Length: 435
Image (tube, rainbow, N blue to C red; front, side):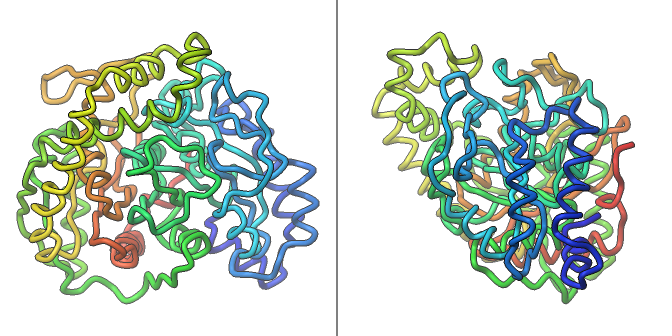
């Protein structure tokens, strides 16, 4: 059931919050093989359900990525270093969810320290894709995507530094929104890189994401009204770098948006190819600075891939970071005219569907690349500019979900979600569930 549908039933008293929590706890137990959760707050959630506030999310069981503090609950970041850490207070987004009436089900699996694209922590094991457990669910918010797709929570929160909401949303066939950087408060979030870190929703639909966004950001998002006359800029450079079948699914989604009244033009994004490198110049040193004390004392406790990225940030010169900040402003300035011209930029959310667990490369149009590098051009351009960006389910390739990216102007999440909602009113990709 969608979050919107569940809240309607709860508010109509057709279902009690306790009954809703019991249903999700039973599903979590039945789907333990997906390894979507790190901590399940069974007793706590049942107690919270009995005293849930009568707000817009009254009684809805929600789970959050395990880098977001829930008071009295372990916050491990899927790491050995924080395995025994217990949060002393709620993150600001959790406090806001509670005030909206939500019940906190638990914390969700992720790539160690939210610093990777797979969600295959060597310390807590991989989260698995509900559509095919032998495939990854993406990262770093992989548990959030897996739990949303498998109905192990009514809605989830993830974090997005360089694509970590949109990637698992795309791979798991659900809707994920990276809000405008700074819109949602990060208090109580374990950071990756403060310049880019953003908390956002992952759920079945754009309507569900709007409900969660309003709770954590204090916005009032109206997804109704249609998209007649909406101006879409198609980023063909990304279509040319996606698997042909993935690109075809996104092209069909754009054709549907056109049928619904949107106007489509070809859009060329300046410095698009360089955006990933620019973001890495800023992100790598910022991430490493968070971990300096542990790198000195507990280097061997990191997983190999995360350790390598943190050490790379250690050895970048200070001039690289300064250049990254300068080039980021140049990139954002160059994007300005496009943001003015188009209501949304559209492209495939990812170049490929979810790879198998253990695969570390992706082959796209005959070229084999490291898996993570193949994703960067599809994620970093929008993170670097701090723009709101969503992944919306738009089809299947080889039995696995794929998604369409919708990228909006700063603080125009409503336009992004309105377009996603209009598309989802006309299609059923977001309603399909894994067996």
